[in-house]
Image: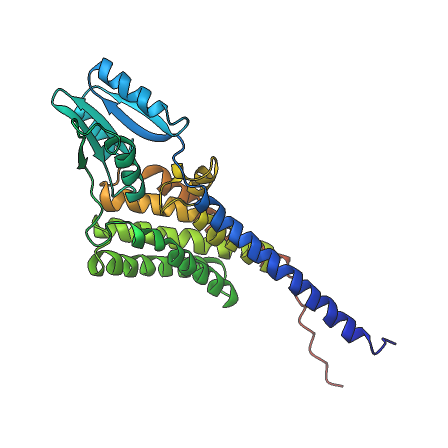
Length: 333
């Protein structure tokens, strides 16, 4: 017979578990978000240099004084350098011309990086030889500092998470679950584009392309939640939240740039749905889709894997459920 103290002992263990778990989770979340933000600095940041060989060599040596900060790409002339900025090959370019030096930036790619380049190049130029700064791809007037863009990833992640969790908890399975995830993501993408582009003016590209990227991001996250929960049960929700809400947002680099985060962290973030979604959205909203292929492939892989796990996992679950034989009707005596 269980003793009278058993319920009290169980409650005490649960209380202790909560007291240990909550500070641990808080410390982990603080580390995930605060550590990358506290270590922001350029690391192999792609930047172009163009002009006569002697002058370009001098600029490259000057940039090399910031050890490990810049990855220098050489271009023949100003047109090539401008094209590289417009296609997101580099974040900016220093062009040395007979009449002086010009700095090409793209604040739409990252206002933080554009400011850093102005400080590193134009801010250190001699007073008698100022550097002309040209913002080749300017940030939208509705979001000149990129604050709204950087803050938009977490709501997208939460919408995707809510879609995946609701699909599982409502008992939707197989093709019905897949259709629900895809339909909800498409609607979320259109609503997001209507708010961010049509209303707030923080996006300035093709409306349907923006809606497509927003919807694919929501689908990738929602399918991850649904797929992992279908395969793993409740632990799948926790793993999905870790990947897409905690790590995915903190390591995305969207408030600065992936190359501004600690080594390896920015690269990891671009392989997770929020980082890939943010990069693809930048490309279609300001750069006519340039460099969007890689991020869109990452989103598609996450979405396809999650949808496949949702469909196949549900089918396997049904196959593993033993059928209950129907009792034979009793014969009348």
